[in-house]
Amino acid sequence: MSEIPKIRRGTADEANYVRNKLIEFNSNQVPNGIYEELNLCVKDEEDRIIAGLNSAICWNWMEVDILWVEDEHRRSGHGKRLLEEAERIARTKHCTFIKLNTFSFQAPEFYKKYGYKEMAVIENAPLGSKHYYFIKELIDHQV
Image (tube, rainbow, N blue to C red):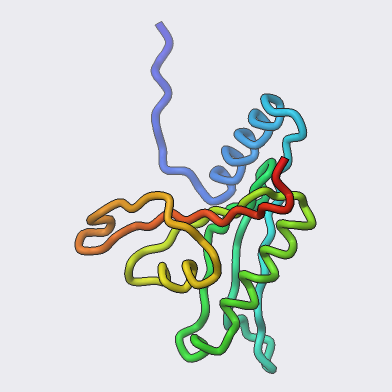
């Protein structure tokens, strides 16, 4: 009888391996499988990153994982610029929508201001807060 393999905590490289294997599997299941990471950043005069957006284009949508602006640079338009650039790129890649998530202590009103619609909310995630899921249709590219 063979021994049952142990579950271990993976490294960052191992996590990337697993992610890439799932991307490979998914690409074989759906025609025109596209997966492309898209990461943008804003740097100051000293070449320090002061804002950034991490996302991926998956088939016909863009999924924004992270949008961050350094505290002292908030309300300076960097978040808006990053979101607009991501949307511009999504349109050129023929995405039909963008989806993202945020918390009540982050920026749900910011996303609403730029046309994102609330899809779902999980209460008490984390405890005492809400976890929002948003979508923005890119209508002129819908099939």
